[in-house]
Image (cartoon, rainbow, N blue to C red; front, side, top):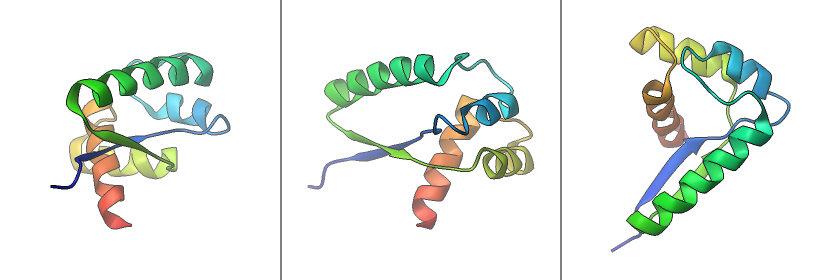
Length: 90
């Protein structure tokens, strides 16, 4: 049986401010804070669930457009759905 694979959106330091500005929910103030929190959370999930989480680069404006068009908002749930969508599109 193949290992389960999950994906998560991973903004770059260069596009983090734009990512933060298009989100409707609370995200960390800085990329460094985001990276620290997300890395710790991913490690915990990977250990507990035995899965590998892949980081996916993305365009914040395209993400926001897709999330709003399909769900009316940009929050952690819709961002997760967008991550799955673009990972399947590759």
